[in-house]
Image 1 (cartoon, rainbow, N blue to C red):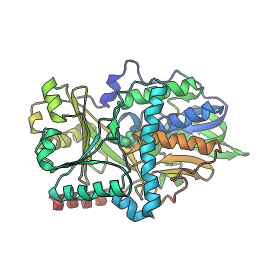
Image 2: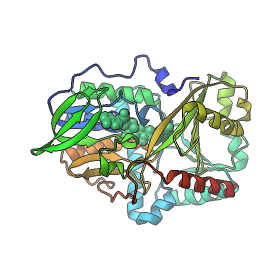
Image 3: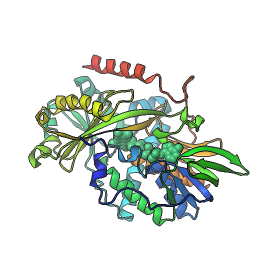
Image 4: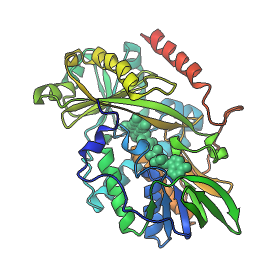
Length: 421
Ligand SMILES: Cc1cc2nc3c(=O)[nH]c(=O)nc-3n(C[C@H](O)[C@H](O)[C@H](O)COP(=O)(O)OP(=O)(O)OC[C@H]3O[C@@H](n4cnc5c(N)ncnc54)[C@H](O)[C@@H]3O)c2cc1C
């Protein structure tokens, strides 16, 4: 079994930038070359800024090439929770930004001829219990009446027209959501960044940042770079030395397995209309078929485990939903860190003069692009009314880097799932 993301094997050329030495000076230093860092780099460089992105590993090493590739409308907080927390006006504004994110991404991919199999095949939220399905009916009404967003309920008796399983109790289909191939997407972003003049320095770890005059000195494993501005785009991989940001982001392991290539008819029968599927459990599963493989993700553990062990835990979960895959081989298993926040909202702004964007809570494939672009506007000092700008970003006492509370939260969520069944 391969213990890296199956997306990487869909690339013709490896996902790595041409070798570049660390410059001595730059206008803007971005830490991290995922979707956020590359997008911020593209839009600042296009405006004439001299940009250097420093990446500890290689382009896309973090969550950006390890994800499920689902471009979903909405945020981690459900439409109901968003409304309760922020009131109608703000909730609608937040939600509509996520639709803008998918539209903006679609347009960008077209403009730059990035072939990453972007589609709008629809996002399907699958109900794990009849009670969850009733909740979907209220969500649909709320989405229509408050958010002016049209979705379609799929009653339990019709779900077989969508999924080759009896596991679920109905669904809610969002026709504006879809998916893409994450590795090709990131490779496309890297290409545009390089064309726009961004320098990408890989295999270089940023180890410290200090004030120098009106700018900063950035210390790395390859020496020092002096810069006017810094943007942090490390999300679920944020290092400890960025203490203020690190205390506000919670890296949570998400685990994916991918089957061998299935025969045409089995692949077609699993997800009939090629939807991007996620279910209603707290310990949720998300899956799709790509290139005749079922790509099946979930939370195998709240503490860090390796991909061999996670596969052992994920396989029975996949079989519970798709028993017809009992004899199918698992070819890939991998893990990545999702950047969560304590309020389950994404955040963008400045902390101590350092720009940052993070915390998409598992909804970053399109949003990290949208936030990266808005972060560029902020850095360029363009007037902006981006609603997520400088939202209060909470943390909790005694949290510095080790998320000691996750096993407790995980046990609580598991219990809730058990009781719902
Ligand atoms: C398994 C999994 C499945 C997911 N599925 C989905 C999905 O289907 N749909 C969806 O919308 N979202 C999904 N997500 C979330 C989505 O992938 C992320 O929100 C998004 O990729 C975040 O991109 P980013 O650029 O902010 O961070 P990342 O891609 O994580 O990039 C951070 C980068 O910072 C670098 N870095 C860290 N420290 C340093 C340092 N000291 N010096 C230099 N570089 C450093 C890292 O090496 C890394 O490359 C998923 C995430 C995971 C892990």
